[in-house]
Image (cartoon, rainbow, N blue to C red; front, side, top):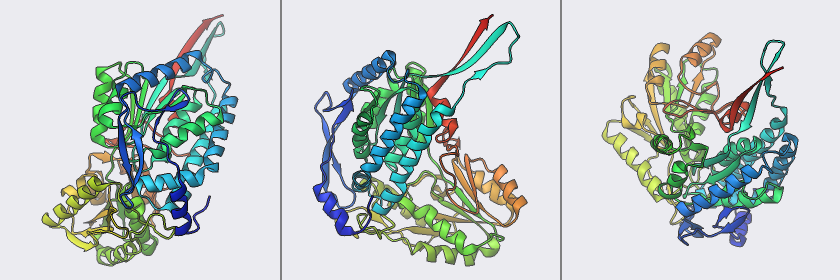
Length: 497
């Protein structure tokens, strides 16, 4: 893969042929209704593709094909070692098409091309390869039974899995779902966000090329209120996995209850606290991490460190360092490898973020840095990284997920107060702690109600670490062996000898 120059990527963008159709039973096809929607780039408003707008008829067809493939059993009956080899080939094909996938990700969603190449593609590869490698090393169990009995505990594929993934990390989030679902022998229907569907559509053909049988992996682009709802209500979908907003996650649970009580696993919103104590080992390092935690991917990250809690005794000094660090993150052309802040995904999201910035000022927040929409590329959607001081935790800016580069700084005096503020949220996805005191670090980490806690760093972990949230940040876990449980049923077989 190459991230050499702006000219390189602009040239590749001009030559790119983009597929926008759905992928069902091993082939591309238009939505049954013939309906399409325009896929526009947030970089400059250019038209990228006409994308199929799938609906109920497409859901019915894809689910039927997925069910047939599952019942026929070619994929689920493959020995785990064979599924492993096919998934490894799938990863190899993703790597071979890495430039194309990275470019699609940047054009479609607006993230910097350097991140698409070095973060998103690499993350997808690690996920596919790690999961593939793990699947033939997971054992079933023998129960401690009497001598004249044999008790077996086995994990069987659950059936048809529908995966609804978000627009901020389209490829990586898709792989977090489809890799363990496919590895454990299920059929999968992937519904990408209408804001960034292109890498998912491309991924489908690579899966077939790798040897995944027809009907086992399908992609249905379209809108949440149509194809998303159709899949969530479908009586022949066994499991629904989702990453996105808490509001949509709640609705999916309702749809499951209204239909067949399908399993629903969600990774939803976050308002993650990043706690910096006066005894942090390196304030410059902590400030740089705090800036990256809110500026990376334009702040469009579920684990964005959007609440920066700073001990009062170092607040003035530390805020100055954070502002200086944030100035190193400036929006530019996402196709330029030197750009570290790209475009906001679309105009509606840009408007939403700017609304929070205006509201914070009205509620008494002190704007220290940024706060404006700018146009480093004409007709694109960009926002300067924004820092607010003098925020209280009950303000909307501190309670609601903004999904943009907007940082709220909140001061505290004691460890107990920091914990109380950090946990005063409906969310519980991630948190950070900066301290040189090992005992304090452990005590705070244990007290934080969050699925991931990072000490003296932000966004730590790899494929071996489970990812998910407490409270209204969702249920279940992605990554690690813990993810496999979402895609299997546990069966107890008791035999009299």
